[in-house]
Image 1 (cartoon, protein in one colour):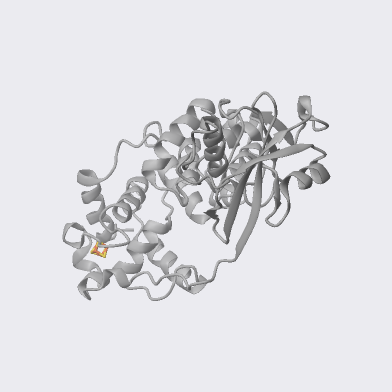
Image 2 (image 1 turned 135 degrees about the horizontal axis):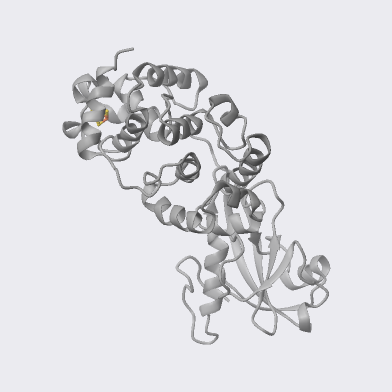
Length: 368
Ligand code: SF4
């Protein structure tokens, strides 16, 4: 099948302007490409690079990932967010060991049968990691195709998705499919940006319908606006006499699933009596910081950090277990801890009673 001229133009541009030195492009094994693709979902390349290198340093081979504790995987993922990605990656690695003798399958259906791997991620693994001609359709690529072919409608709608996949398949380069897909991603991340695309510098400008119409930013159509629900709670920083803080492991599913966080009391509860009744810990209120907001993908979460001093020695009745741990705020990050909680712990570690009346961590303010 002849190469589409779009693919030829894109590859010529890629050879001169594309990215060739990303860490996962060096020694581009299917495993490395897979990890990078999962990290790149909802996260910018610039942020992913350091996380990828740390992850590969700790778990260089798929067998290492499959054999690792989930805690270790989540700790290496800490700060990247969207932790279901890490849980799925870990489970999928275990399944590759069981089903495919530890070899990432070079097969679209087998890849898509693994947790956390959709069609685009599978296409990226096959093209960038195995040199096989499969299309991809991540957010950047959707934007490029939506503009080049003036595809109406929000890409979250399945009919629009089908149209975009049709273009992705039709334009796919059979020769150098990995470079071609990387070129599409690079173009979307740099030249064809969401706002103010640099059309004069684009290799596709002569064929781009949105550019010809003078309204590139009209594509793709934005997602319908939905009102995000608001939840609120008090997060309890319970300190013992040694300065250690009580951490609680969250349930395996849901937001921050499997991560170590802080006990959460209802927003209207009196924190110390709540801790006694629900955790069996006798504590004394020390202070609280002003509430701050963390926005998850589907709701806002207002958290009011409350510091309590443990009155019983040795953690009272609450011993370390699979779901509870006492950690000093400065302890090395050997547990997976969500970034907002990690910032609170650091703020507490730096807190100097009597002197600190300001924001201890750039995110919250002391109020009491
Ligand atoms: S011409 Fe402009 S809108 Fe079209 S693909 Fe290139 S940068 Fe994007």
